Each structure stands twice: as structure tokens, then as C-alpha cells.
Amino acid sequence: MIRPVLTFALATALSACGGEQPAAPVDAPAAPPQAEAPDASMPAYVGRWAATPALCADGAWTFRHDGLSTAGEVSCRFDGVAALDDGYEIAATCTAEAPPQAHRLNLSLSPDGRTMSVRGGPFDDPPPLSRCP
Image (cartoon, rainbow, N blue to C red; front, side):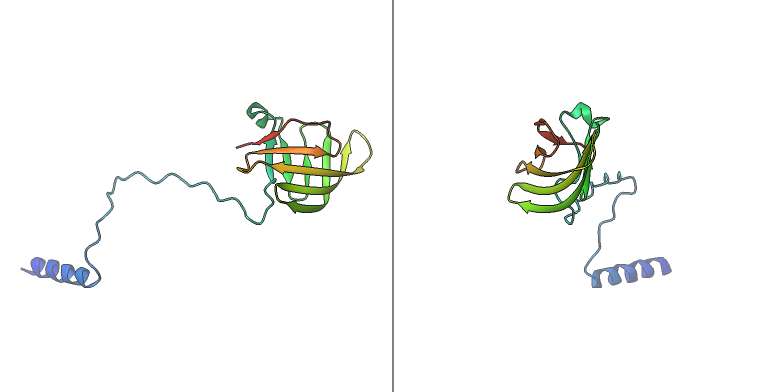
């Protein structure tokens, strides 16, 4: 007799709170982890980029907010970055198998942000780069 009264009291309390909520199945698979949203405070060029997907493993260029390094002998420190409609203009000091020299780089990103062209600096017309996973 006490059990039916407790069940009725519990059901009444639940209905007063907006009704019964369906319980999730105990054996429901966990939701897959979501990819982190890109950090909106970082420039769009930040990340690893390569001329082909195969080069992402050991031939990627690494762009940081304050510089870049390639898989070869080039590294640059960014002295000033100006955002443009389709990319960035960057004053940089680069070392490429020689003493550091001042350069101007232009980074142009595709509208979807998956490819980027690099012009200027110590680079001899590199191919477009694709964002590495």
C-alpha cells in the first residue's frame, strides 16, 4: 500500500514540474566529440598548410600569428600584419639560407578558407597551399 502511494506522489510531483521527461536509454552510444571551433581571435592563416595533402605529414608550412616556418630552410618573424578583404599583407623578417632580411608577404585566402596563396618574401612563386587537418 505504501508503494502505490509513493508512486502516486512521485508522479504528481513530476507533473507539477512540467510533466515526465523521457529517460535516455542506458545503452545509448555517446555522441562523438565535436571539433573545436576555430579561435576567432587568431588570424585565418594560423595553422599548418601544404602544397599537397601528402606533404601535411612532414612537408607542411607552419603559420603562427607572429611568424612562419617551412619544412625547408625558411623562417619568418612577422613584424606587422594588416588584414585585407581576401587575406593579409605582412611585413616580415625572414631567414632563408642567408642573414635575416626584410620582406613583404601577401597571403590570399580562398573564400572557404581551405587554400592560401603566398606571394613575395623569399619564396619563388610557391604553389597554392591547402590547410592540413
